[in-house]
Image (cartoon, rainbow, N blue to C red):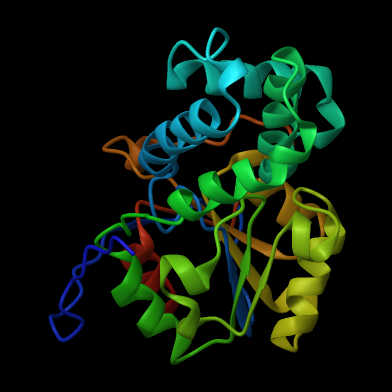
Length: 256
């Protein structure tokens, strides 16, 4: 686990921004997205793709003419997603499908796909938590049951942080993902509350915010940028109940 720790004994300094047209009410539990909410997704994948690239060159050598660089793996994943749009959001299925595509194109054994994915999966769990994430999770978990709700393939027992969560749901473990209502309802069940009393926290305006609100939950939109204070909701769907720059800001908003 690659973890950037912040001394949780230090006072948390918060900045938060609330959206004026929606108000938080009666929060009994919190569900959280993982990628780009607790840690940056891109660096983890950038580290993992060369591992997958090297594994394929060693175990499926006929793929070498296709795999001129690790970037080809990313291009093929995008290509596979365009071929199978119904899998959008299921990161495991997309990655595994793109690996099978490589093996098929190079006339290698398709049975190697699962082992290749396992190599990628292990490397993908090496994440760098945002500085605010672990102290905020500790604070939140002392006050609310927490449930992870992700479309990604991160495993909290491998990334670290699992001790703060009551349950963790993703398309592989649950059977469907965000923005479908079912996974949010399952998160509320796992937390022991009605969907309307659960606050979902995430960075994606469609998968996290619109999905949670459509499922009857409340939503906090995490906008990790210097422009967070100017973030505006431009979609036709209802706006988030809260816009926060980071999870420290979320804690202060809930403590207000």
